[in-house]
Amino acid sequence: MLGLYIHIPFCVRKCKYCDFNSFKLNIDEKKKYLSALSKEMELYKEKIGQKEIDSIFVGGGTPSILNEEEIKILFDNINLNFKIKEDAEITMECNPGTLTLNKLKTMKKCGVNRLSIGLQAVQNHHLKYIGRIHTFEEFEKNYHEAKKVGFDNINIDLMYALPNQTKEDWMESLEKVVNLNPTHISAYSLILEENTELFDMYERKEFKLLDEDTDIEMYEYTINYLKSHGYNQYEISNYAKEGFECKHNILYWKCENYVGIGTSASGFLDEIRYNNLCEIDKYEELILNGKKPIEWEEKLSIKDKIEESIFLGLRMNEGIKFKDFKNKYDFNFLEEYKNEIEKLTKLQLIDINETGMKLTQKGKEISNSVFVEFIK
Image 1 (cartoon, one colour):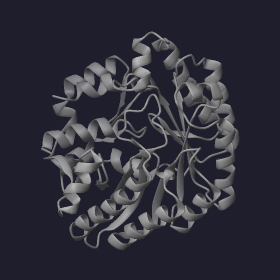
Image 2: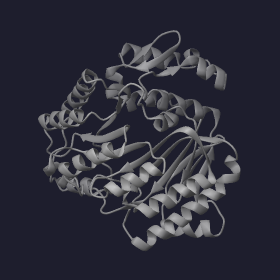
Image 3: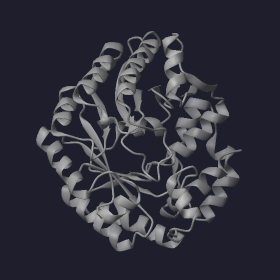
Image 4: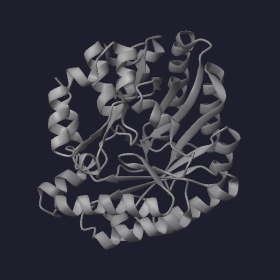
């Protein structure tokens, strides 16, 4: 399996909760950046050779900030430099407020077959408070246009435990989104990150965070409500109709290889994990000099690979299989983690049998605490 991630770092305005690498839109900078992306792709062309790309994910930032011509240029360059599988999953992140019918038509012509649309909430006052540039009505218009153009695989992003959000607000968000019948829903609990506007607002006591019990209640309600409407929880925060699980994200969670292109993009190739520079100027300068814009890279040790396989694998509902650790790393999981398994089983945080292990519902609610147990 081989994936390709491309980062488009531009936004109309940064959302108040966002700590991703993104910059306010600059028209001239977009053209320069697309040119740099093309040159970076060329730098990986020889290394990848004839290997086929199984999945592509264009993320951001706001990829739908590109105009029709720029979208076409981006995908022309992808196809020029990489061999794409005929049945590859090709996802583009989109945000209402930047999406148009013509852009959707262009994406479709360019081979995009999956959209991931950022909504977060259905109440306009919540959208405004967290710094979104769109209304729920604008999102609905975009969604129906996407269906009209022929997109039949659409993810909708939602966020709970927002400032001043009630459980009833969250229930309404889920109900309205389910009524639209997307194939995939991502539902994340708000995490306050330092160096974000929302974090500063919290520090100034402009709002209170929801208590942990309410957060867990919302999470449990989400799982049960979505399950009752045909959405299978296949990962801690992701729910899909049968056959519509996100192939690209599964590739990450199964520690498969992927190329990361663009500022701040990460990649994993031939047991080496790397991360690109965040600053656009430095990124473009290195590429113009024929160098890969890598800020850091590391060759993973066996220990690193085992630990990554555990905490990424446990994110998925199917969990991990002990035979995979024996086959890949000659590692006896049950023997090496005997004490940790005993402790976590007593705490009812994992389900275990002779073939593998997965998180219980209680384990999912405090998953990070479980993951820490397997880092030695």
